[in-house]
Image 1 (cartoon, rainbow, N blue to C red):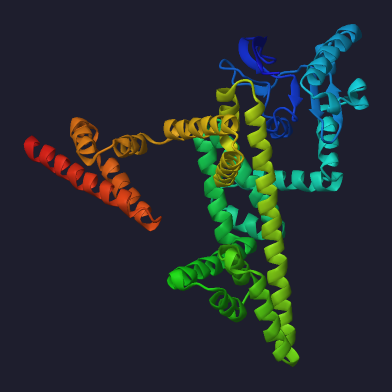
Image 2 (cartoon, rainbow, N blue to C red):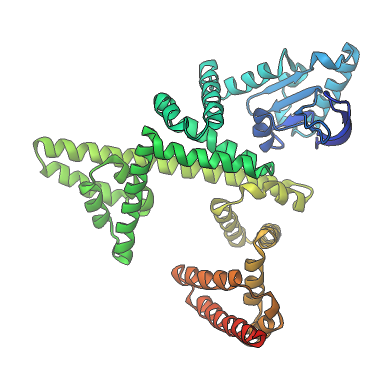
Length: 452
């Protein structure tokens, strides 16, 4: 059920305000609605007169078929008669049922559980995810600390960080990062900038920040070593790096960056080394092998989960009656894993001789490419349009026709992108873009000369 655009009175000054009112949060149909609900970023009244900002009071329903959750909440302040409540809840339940396949229509749908408060509703959702009351309270404490840190004056912040050092941990930084993203998405740039400044200060002043900087240094060192090996990177070379690493953080970086090289033969070779070793060295090598094995299993499980999630999202797009809308809804979740799953499905359909599937999957790929092109910065769109022309002559002529659009930023994009293409193993396209860059540079220089 999409949000309904309606007019409500501001609770503070009674000014009519337009609100996108959302009553049904069906995560089975719209997975993003779960985070939207739990974050409280829905049904917001933003009054231009008195600057009041808060949630509009309305009946709400939440549904998750996988966990068999169906709940409703009716705020007491709206004074909705019982008969009207039952009528509205029934309409929302019918909407939930009508969108479910027959095999998923179960008994829990006939008995939506009422929640006494909105917080109670959120707590039940979190409990179903294994999030305890204690965990929720701990997170609230982190939020309170963040608010205290954000409101601290510059001269008192270092002392406050020292005082709260034990509470400044990974969870706090995760909450801060999520808050930065949400604040920026709302268009509140000053607020997001203030949070970014706090993040930098916390990394600089806290014990957790010091440990984080050390881990980042380990990761950067591992990246440099692997890059220096280049095409000489072999399982034996990776093993030597892993065995001489002086911390688990560095081992984790090697395993993450060079996972394809850590195969069955790698572990066989490492086991032979362990068999030849003795005493403390044998114990050290055994612990290192077990740690690497644990890391590879975690990486593989995470990759499998991402693939399964991408496959489910692709199926949902394929089944959607409106392909363009489905692609727009899925856009924030389309990444390299999704594209790899899409390509694999196209190859499988081709191998099976399913021309109908190949066509549908190709339409999805084309739609994604259009979305990417449309959302790219103007400079990237300009470059892509030139590179899409069939011949160098057409591209050069197109560049000259649009010489007025050439800016220092455009030239920088062209130069950077040509280097990325070369490093990415596409030398022919890089050569073509470098020629266009040289032509563009000449056009800009000529235009500057004529101005003198």
